[in-house]
Amino acid sequence: MALHSGAFCFHGVPTVTHESLRHKQWAVKSSGFSRPRVVSKSQLKVKVKAFSGDGGLVESNDSSLVVCFGEMLIDFVPTISGLSLAEAPAFKKAPGGAPANVAVGIARLGGSSAFIGKVGADEFGYMLADILKENNVCNEGMLFDPGARTALAFVTLRNDGEREFMFYRNPSADMLLQESEINYDLIRKAKIFHYGSISLITEPCKSAHIAAAKAAKDAGAVLSYDPNLRLPLWPSADSAIEGILSIWDIADIIKISEEEINFLTRGEDPFDDAVVRKLFHPNLKLLLVTEGPGGCRYYTKEFSGRVKGLKVDAVDTTGAGDAFVAGILSQLATDLSLLQKEDKLREALLFANACGALTVMERGAIPALPNKDAVLNAIFKTVP
Image 1 (cartoon, one colour):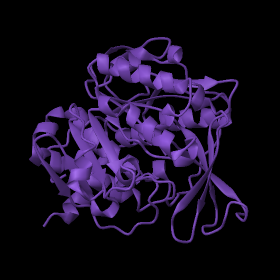
Image 2: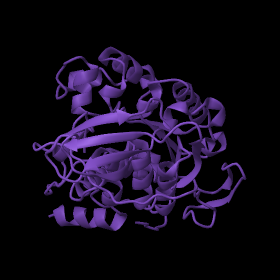
Image 3: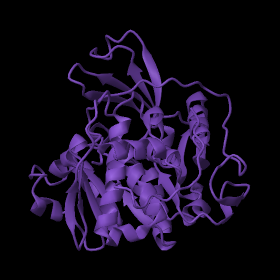
Image 4: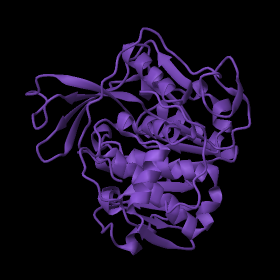
């Protein structure tokens, strides 16, 4: 479904979660396309004057662009919950990939976003490009590899509501993105550059990721990092810890879950502020710890605290963490001074918590991502 909205600034309104190896999953209906469809300057509802022929932004007065870098893939979800993959009678395909979810989430909230990554030159890859277009995400940085397929993940939803993954990427197109293929013009227009850790697992994508982040940093962008741990994709737990932490110190904003803190600190208590502070590097501006329905904790050099979550009836938790990230980045993209103003930051985090809460009330990560009005209405209902 397409949602078109302009940019907005959320101020003055009292403004979840770890996507671990096992979570709930939504079923999303989508259709394939025979060729890539990219966003034209007339279709993209952001403040962009023109695009170059190779997809780079030539001229832009959009000072709030968030560029998301990484993977976009297809999840195959059983039509019946509580069965193993072998027992499932049928599957529904669902667009996935945390960085892409964040890009769509920001656009849904009225912000300006773009996605950079590689998919296969196949029906699934073209479908994913079209989904970005339909949701007003600039996909000029999306590439199609004729020699590799779009990544697939088969997901089972157990009776206890947790997910288990089986990935098909040996290698998939997203793993083959090369440094020379990156749309650096688009990156240099970013106010915020957001990424995860899955793109660090193998070459050549690892080098491409590092080069893209460096280009964004050199251009003055704020770097946002959500590790989004997917342990089965890493060679070992030790390599996952090493890889995730290898780029830790360059990030300005880090969002992490309780489970990821426990993993990265090798079993230490994620609720102990002293443990969390060990992960706070000298150049970090904001460290966010998501607690699912409990809300989130925030840490800066000057202050820290907790913002409660919204109470909702959860149907499925897939995409809640990405919705939270989209919520906070949409606010920071319009006003980075929130990082120095605790009261305003708390409002923005309440907004982000509401984004995550609304997402778990529906099935499907991208279909469930809320728009600005829905988020504000949910917040107003909770304010006495």
